[in-house]
Length: 249
Image 1 (cartoon, helix red, strand yellow):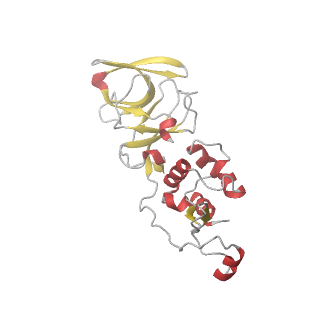
Image 2 (tube, helix red, strand yellow; image 1 turned 120 degrees about the vertical axis):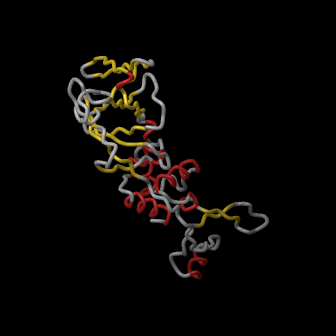
Image 3 (cartoon, rainbow, N blue to C red; image 1 turned 90 degrees about the vertical axis):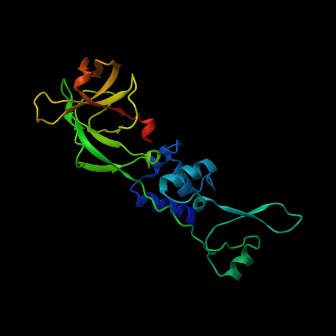
């Protein structure tokens, strides 16, 4: 296995990812990365794939690129592919076998210092007719991996879905990401946090679809069973936008 493919395999394993998942995050067929690694197809990654894969794996794009140089003869404008590693045999033996291939210096570019960040899990969305849950904004329950597209963007937290009050939009066991800094949008899903009925109790939160919002009222709906609920704006502590699946890639 050549160094580029080995790097891809090693980084996927180190990050706890899988080839099919990485392929889908690149917007490609689920078998793309596996075919590249095991079957050598394609021989070299296209530029747009290299940059996307480098971002996912936390490496420099140049580490995924097969370098090319002219052969050297003025009459020959073709290019020769060489890999950024030392040859497998001695220099003399390798040049005798492949006179047009020159070894490149074994130079490793520095990888970015940052690694994929994590997102705190702030609660578990329960089922039932109301579907309320406690939104824990103190210590996180645990942490989950932050999608590459959201690295460096703060005010994001995660929730576990338990129950089916928002099925089939969200299934039990699914993780949703909430972007607290983005303004809520009518027609999008939100996490709405309201004041408790009893002073001293923890505020309750709801994962619902935002239908209407005025100075006095906020109207939301759920899917299972389908129903609408209205909160007084004075009772609402926060309304946070839930990211779509496309925004979580």
